[in-house]
Image 1 (tube, rainbow, N blue to C red):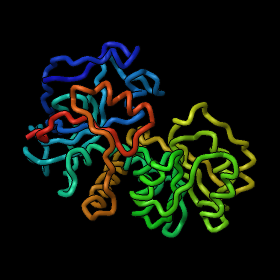
Image 2 (image 1 turned 90 degrees about the vertical axis):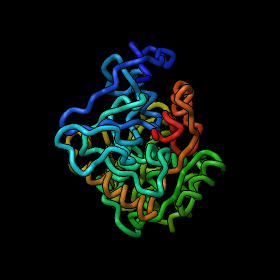
Image 3 (image 1 turned 30 degrees about the horizontal axis):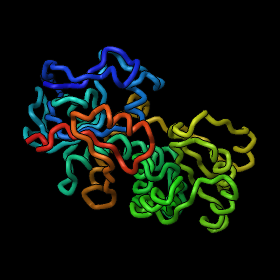
Image 4 (image 1 turned 180 degrees about the horizontal axis):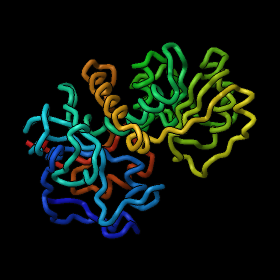
Length: 329
């Protein structure tokens, strides 16, 4: 099969197409003919060796896979050849990928392959952050940074599915309009001057209950200071530049919590809960509560451009690499 492979992590130019052996599903595994693979900021960081955990070499990028079941290993039940499925696995930039059967979930009928490839990682991150870590309650207010990106737009929809009110923070009018279109109740700019006053006005004078923050940029401390009593600030990522610091006395003054959201370790230490969350997300998609917004779609031949664009933070929605235009049929 054809796969994207690099022998070093020096640059994105290190990645090339190679002919490699098609994997064979072992006991408890599923072989998927890949139709589409999600491409995120973290995928590009990993590909460059700049993530906190470096991948083994040779490396094939891609974790969010959608496609058609090609074969199943011994002991696999409930999944059949020909099923449309999505999963989180490794080596997604390839014509075929294997995944543990427990992580393979049927795609809801109303989702195409591109939408399904946009769901697993971003929506699991948002679900883990908001439902699990923040214990978001119906009627609470959530401030979402990076609201037009893949994980930010997922957080908007997960928060709405949980009955919350959402204020979307984004840097441009286009991105704020995108966030409102995909479920946010209000939108706010990211200009520091007077920002806390504008946020206070949008939150009934009381500030948000929860901050979902995949940016952790210049407004990090301002957002924490704006929390209500018993507020929760979710640290999801650091795409906003240098990692910010926070005076520890603010947690005492606000009775507030600063909490990390690491979906990689969530899956490592709490896999049954992560699998249950993915099934709940699939049910929400089937019920129309969430609908992953697909951003730029690149053909397989433009895998490099897809990773560069995902790293830029300029787009809206999820970048998708289309491996098989026919959906793997």
